[in-house]
Length: 202
Image (tube, rainbow, N blue to C red; front, side):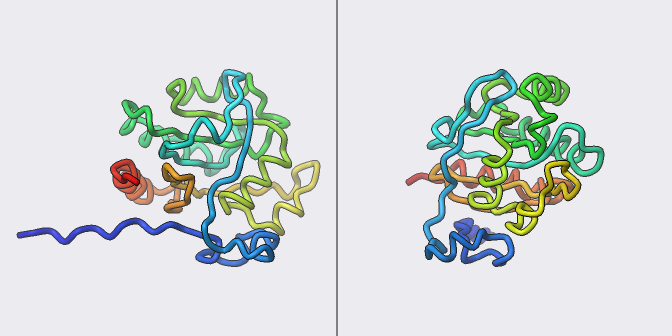
């Protein structure tokens, strides 16, 4: 029996998301379509600068976390290890783990965390840097942080927010899906979709 062909994964744009997840400036500028991840530059766990140029033409998964988290982050990064294992031989696949707590998550702290999780050099990047730029990327590029929540973050972190979303990004820097990083089923779907996106060609 011939199996029906899977539909191509959709390209997700701001217009497809709940308005509370999209920074108002993007919709005001009428950038609801044709969205791609913006430029960024942060330090990885080896102290190297990683930018969008390092993932151009590659498929990657992005997450936001912090190393001292005792709730969802350990579950998420246990699941992310599964993702890394499946695609460990793919040079065209990367994992980007951005911290939401750069004051604590120094390069040295990220290196310790990366080592504990068996991160493969040049595949799984743990990224830290300027807090405002990290949060700006979260709410204007990956859409994993409500703008109102980002604005309410106090210097003491009393309103600290983090998300369980894994974001799948394709070779053209377009968002192709959101997945629950705390769910084995959600990550099963992510692994399946990564394989599909890796097979896509221009």
